[in-house]
Image (tube, rainbow, N blue to C red; front, top):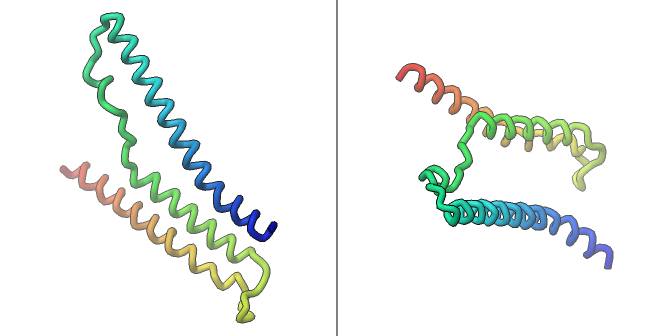
Length: 122
């Protein structure tokens, strides 16, 4: 029975985290609308900026740094892991998996840098 319980708990943790985040956003939006309704009931004129949903700014630099850090972390993790695969090769040979997020992050960083140069020129 425990061979089924442990993977179930491990796999349900990310789902639970996403559900908690969605609930938090829902409650935050509801609180915002309640506040706007209270202001409108008091007769306060609401500026149009308050009625627009807040948008998260797209930031390639932040995404790039997260991916670069994740790629380097994966590479370090695989290099530090002891043990062997079924074929007899060491787990440390899997360090190349970290190259995918690392190179993707470097691509985002290059894109951010090139966009910055274009804005300065234009």
